[in-house]
Length: 155
Figure 1 (cartoon, rainbow, N blue to C red):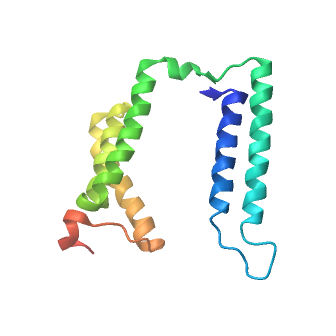
Figure 2: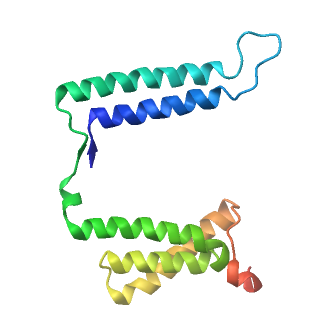
């Protein structure tokens, strides 16, 4: 999917407005005319100006707002895209309750099924990938991952 210049400009301008509004909430520096909000406000104003220029150029050129790529016209690809988004939402909701190990295995199993991995390889690959990721984050990087239902057997 390609966004036309007008749509990209609108997004840039909206982000610029959000940056300027957020910068206005920063506290002033006592005794100084320049505070912590100056630089973000200048960046936000630049985004607004650049976004407006993109909107003007996009409307003047062809007015295309969104152009779908070839993959987005295939129902199977759209289903896979929606499944990835749904799987990520499932992970975000379930990981604390189920734990990383169970959630990641379910997450990968669903995606492997959807993407056509041979059925005999799905579970061993899902478990192996989950354990490698767990080792990398939990042991090497020392990132605490939720144990959830497996709290009693945590190593």
